Length: 438
Image (tube, rainbow, N blue to C red):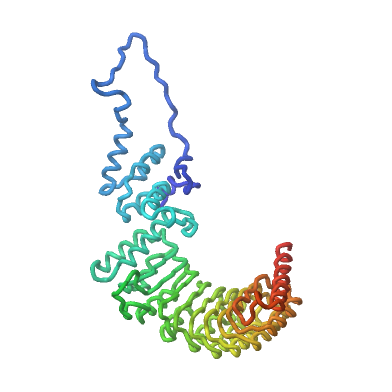
């Protein structure tokens, strides 16, 4: 590690070589022709410019043999840029991970393989080497099916590049590898996004190919118990039901690092909501919980409200596309009355009506509530509910965003509804301007 540090520098993502800021180690010497000395002549058929220097010959030899005999740290710093620029882009990733540290090389390699539109370096720690190996690990896991390649070879590939992987993304996991062992092999893992499906399956669809298995849930739970760096866990679209969630909860309850949990687009019901409410207790560190597009009904809203009463960490709660109904929405908003941390609440498409708006109205008038963003779109709100909201917002100073689209009023045809919406938007806009001013 110490040797590698001598050859890295700031500004590695620019067009300037990452080693170009090193000081030249040797001064130039000028040679004057002595009188009476014979003039040197270039060999017949060649000019002086065609004769490679000894340094160029050495660099070319290193480049030719790099795959079998890698040499990098021993090369003098003034030749590093030339060496990196000459290295081929076909070096085995396992070799390149250990011996190539110049960001210009990794930039060339990423652009050659993924093209500009797939290279979003801001999502990969602003380093090209991290971008390359996070995508490389993704490809390795998505292509491994447990049959053609031995499992031990998979672990070897992960071990070599483990230092550069902070985000693990997989959109298919055909071989269902042991995720406990996979994640343990990546000690810097901060974010994990997994989908157990099949890409481009076409007419070969089989139900058994989709969704998380019991062994997968157990592996993830075992890793969560000992995770020290993971902060974001996204398990969207995995056909996750209450039984699988119960297994994951064993690890989530013991975990002390995960602050963002996404289990959207699954099959979680009221019982699953009851399990998740245990993560919202007084000792919770969860700041974001996404439960959108599940099967949570009014009873699930009651369980979540119970957890919110004791919670002091949650900032963002997303319950879009569930089945709370007006009764569940009312109980949920009552639970939010005692929560001072929540700033964003999404209750879109939950068949909410008058009772829920009564709870929201009380929520907006409570001084200790700091709600800044509220989504009530695609529900069953009418003109009466709009009037209640407008009256509440006149005494609210925190809400800066509200979404009321696709309800039981049409501002294009109803002048009264359009006027009420304009007044509501004006109140929200004034709150936003007041917040920016201070």
